[in-house]
Length: 132
Image 1 (cartoon, rainbow, N blue to C red):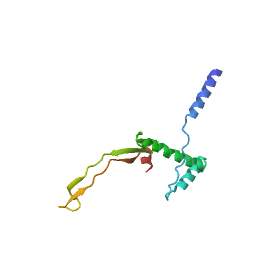
Image 2 (cartoon, rainbow, N blue to C red):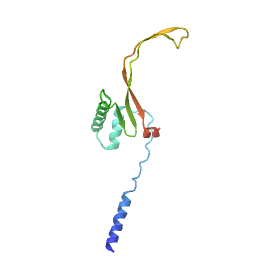
Image 3 (cartoon, helix red, strand yellow):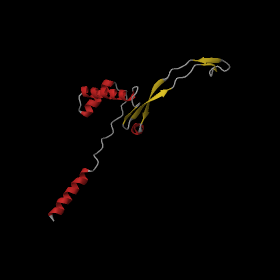
Image 4 (cartoon, helix red, strand yellow):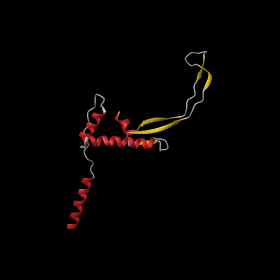
């Protein structure tokens, strides 16, 4: 009999622990754009970290992103749920002569050559789209 009561108590504790924690109230919208210092202060206040520690996190995040997107690297960095940074390689374009001018019909123009380049694209992910 005692074994059944003890087992019932432990299962009751387990189910109580599985309940989802209460969600925080949505923070009010910020009306003006924050500076880097204001962002660091806001994060430091809400996370109980020092401003120096928050700055170190930002610096390390920048280094991590650079290691992902620089030449010879993966070329893609994902901040889970928020955004994805990709590098897109654009091929070189040859010079062209006597091309019709789209702004002045009847005239011909020359287009200069462009070297190959790498562009950066930032794509929003699901959570960021839901925020808007």
